[in-house]
Amino acid sequence: MKITTVANQKGGVGKTTLEIHLAACAAEDGKRVLVVDLDEGDLSQFFPQTEDGDNTPYLMSSQLFNGEHEGRQPRQVGPNIWLIEADVALLDVDDMDLDVIHALRPALERFSDDFDLCMIDTPPNLQRRMVAALTASHAVVAPFNISAFTLARLPKLMNTIETVQDRYNPDLRFLGYLPNLVNSRSPEEIDALPGLRESYGDAMFAEQIIYRPCINKSLAAGNPVWWKARSGSQREAGREMKRACKAVLDKVWAE
Image 1 (cartoon, one colour):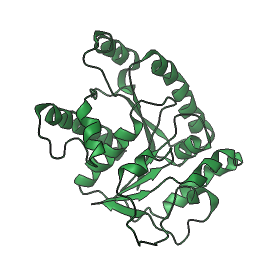
Image 2: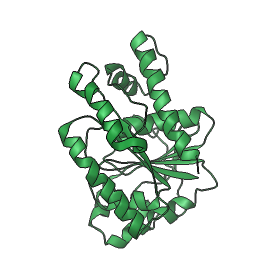
Image 3: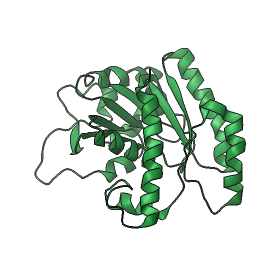
């Protein structure tokens, strides 16, 4: 099972949107995908909720850290997709001793024979949960939008990744920065892309994801953007999103 984190130390860059589509893309390719929500629960809210009358003790994210995960299982939320959803107790993890960052990987490894891919969604700040995710992961991908605030945070994210590699997880691979939520109507954003690619080189994906309202509309309906595409804009958004997802997943599988 490949464990991959989607991370950025800045909110509003589309981490959760990317994670949903990465999981859907891998699942459509026949991979069994485990999705872990270590963020505020937006990822968990996207998937179908537990049915009324279902009293199964499903595994919650906080239990990956407090040792209460034995005997509990993720909940299947779609074809080839299972979820470990965020709960209120997850917030307590950030107040635990630093050693808690080492609890996540062994808790996830009990599922290593059950899934091909584990995707972890993280909070947009340097807390125990993010460090734990990076410590547990084989790889990390960093979506970003083109804004002065976000671009200023990219070196800080890389510093965090390198610190985790040095101290806790030398095998962690940085897959690259992925331009996301790009405003195609902004000459400044479009003009910035070539310079960013020149600056970051192979550390930046050649693919990019243009912001289109149809992406959020599809997510609100519970679908990745390429499902049931009816308009030309949605079809183009679907092709673009799938290209980006496949580029990320190709790097995940390559080792």
